[in-house]
Length: 108
Image (cartoon, rainbow, N blue to C red; front, side, top):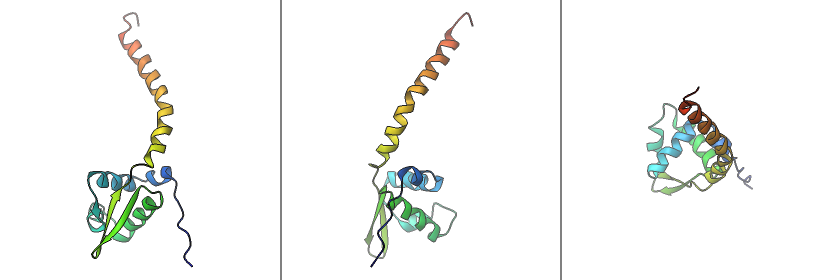
């Protein structure tokens, strides 16, 4: 009996710069593994491990097409990241407003 696939945390999946670049590539269009691997200076096996983590986080999926596996992006899980970041936008907005006030203040 096969072990169940472990679901990876979306935040952990996007923590690696290689995986973020894979997501960027797949945002442009779906790609076969060979084309994805060509963008990186690492073995195809290493790229496959990154693809597996992204698949387990449900950020991408792959389908067999002939002898090649074609991957496509599923950005929906990134909404969790967007929601988390949106909480902190108020702090960025406040800091920018304070900076604008300091820059425009003639008495400073």
